[in-house]
Image (cartoon, one colour):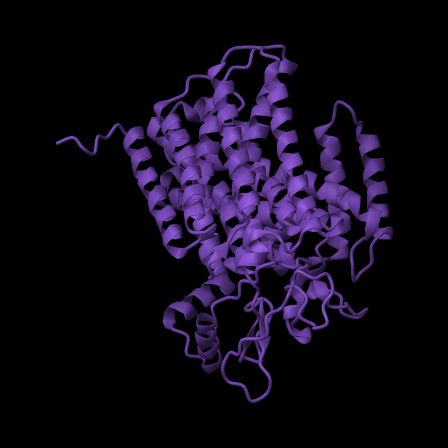
Length: 574
């Protein structure tokens, strides 16, 4: 094979095609295929978990320190966290920008249908949205799509109006967010959301429930065996006479999350516990809503939880559940802990429930060394070593064994955490297509379609997991805002990157020929956005279960149509 002589020419760090077809693994094809499949799955996990548990954790720190309102956090910080992998795809597709835009359109279609439906179903209540904010986010997404269409149609031009279009969109959206938040603070009781919904607290009859399994259920008083509906908690006031203040206060004190508990001096988080917390997706999504006071409290379904609790207490879990638990704890958890430990050594994490001082200090030093390596034309090895030692000393002096840094001392940790996690996601996304290509050395159009679809699906999965967890834990409106603002930000930053790339090299802005498949995806996405707004407005600005199921069905139809177009299949041909 030519690949054994010249290599596959892959831009990844490992030539997977050469390893699978030109080493001793070539004599055992089933083993080579199994290893490639397993490693591809690990890479998908690394992309999703690094985006949510590391990059997302750094962004969440900004949210917590700045006191950003939940609605603003959903359309800014959470949206940027979810859009990060898609932006990196645009960077990887710099030589073929139009294919990068096709990826973002496919990811946006998935988010506007599957993710929106899943997060509203996970909230388990009829979700009422604010008409002004919902219309603002959808309109921003539509305006971004139309702007991208204008830029692509003016292909091979050097128009100076393109940057002004980006500045205008960003400025208009920022002004709209500021105005809506200003009106909310001035008139907290006049919004459609405040008039059309009231939060309700629910009790839990299981005295052993904890925060991880049941976020918004209170232990019942003694002698109570059934769920009792509590008094309506008015969260529109800044102060309350009752202890039911926001989502955190709706949890019994001894079962409160670790973020709201005072940490004793001898209650230092162990290394294993810190790594386990970083390996889970749920705790990180929960940090988004710990300090929020949601206008609508969405309790989990009591019947579902009660059934699970009875089965757990009686030990009557089925064979499938026991097999899954055994597989998770004996096989996958050790792998996840090993992968998490490696990333914790190079990516600083300051979340309190996952804080471990030695690993954070080492990560600060290694992140500095990585930055120096990336800027080798500016930094000498000596200067990089001195800087690394200085950062390590600062990290050790500004933190303690029981808690991380606070105030301005936290800023370097957040900056280096974002830098290192972004670099890690970028590396994993370079390896992911290369590992898929190794399955078939003769890469044709069909294989390329599989590659692009796999990258889109993996990136979208990160946003799906995060948004569903956030919605289930009491902030569906925050998650919903990120579903429209996140893809819009990714598209806008992608356009800005390619315009800036062309400006830097003094070349015309060139995107390439737009395929029929891309145009169909573009039209489908515009139609889905219009359907979201019209259907929600028809049901008095609420997502009903029927509407969520309709969105899932529409996505399935779109996928079938995309496959027919890509494979040149006419389903109506006799």
